Amino acid sequence: MEEKNYEGLKLENQLCFPLYAASREIIKRYRPFLDELELTYTQYITMMVFWQEKTINVKDLGRKLFLDSGTITPVLKHLEAKNYITRSRSHEDERVVIAEITSEGEALKEKAASVPPKIACCIKLSPDEAITLYSLLYKLLSDGCE
Amino acid sequence: MEEKNYEGLKLENQLCFPLYAASREIIKRYRPFLDELELTYTQYITMMVFWQEKTINVKDLGRKLFLDSGTITPVLKHLEAKNYITRSRSHEDERVVIAEITSEGEALKEKAASVPPKIACCIKLSPDEAITLYSLLYKLLSDGCE
DNA sequence: TATAATTTAATTGTACTCAATTTAAAATAA
DNA sequence: TTATTTTAAATTGAGTACAATTAAATTATA
Image (cartoon, rainbow over all chains, first blue to last red; front, side, top):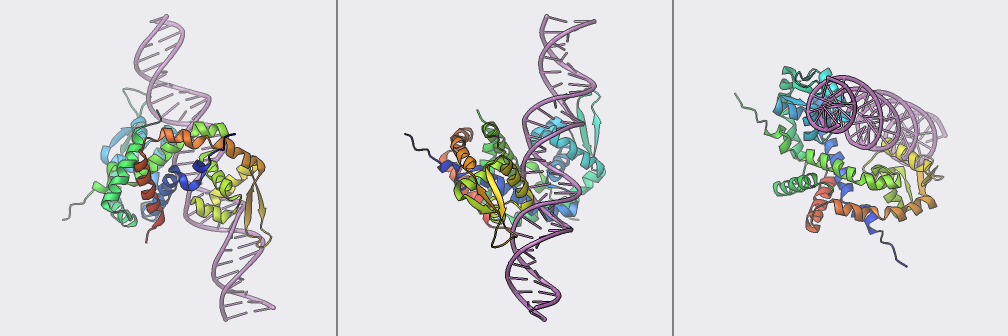
């Protein structure tokens, strides 16, 4: 009779659990700073894309943020309600919705620029550790489940 | 006039974003395996605690999982509905709710034991990389925003 | 002891997150 | 062309997450 191995079911032996917990904990540290901008974390990283791209469609935005239209559509509607972006159908392909940053959205970048330095102080990793973590996370993101 | 530095607002310069994205991506890889157990990821890690502890109150469970009662209460209600745990008030302190695993909950451990080895195959990190990632994540979790 | 402060869960309300479905438009095949 | 398939967003529904509030029980303090 085989004796089953339950070590893999212990919380302290999980890799995904601290990933999940740390993600939420760090996002929580953003909150006081994002509250000043009246943005959620998801809205904040969405705006980051617009500050770089000016214009993007839902599909490409989803690929960048690892989110699907079910999540993105309401986020874009919130940002549109705040007048940070506009949404319209593409003339070339009516299926495609193109979102574009407004001047108010551009202006928000000014205030948002103060967030990254403040967050940096909250994350007690050395530059080397941060680089290592960064590359390991992108390694996880790049190679999917075969 | 100062020229503002916007490098910190670029998505590729974020540490939190890949953390957030990788967390969700890895949890997605659990789904086909957890579907067989009819558990969500949150319910799964909650059951992990019960497989180790047998009995725990909401507060201690929250400390272990980095979740508050607003999240935990409905999760425990779901697990109770599936007959994997019971919930009752402590006699010593009526404020405290104690949850306890049932024999059905214990039995689920058998099926769940197959999940960790399957997930291990989906995560393409070397043992060294996994250990490094693990310790960096716990480092993030341990030291809060001063 | 009576009151105030604290603690524990639950509740409420907002916002994600995602699988699955739907709808409309476009691309491809018959 | 006409029919089929594919694609892009939106919608729907279930389940978190979490801040803020509430209610009840406990503890501390005047």
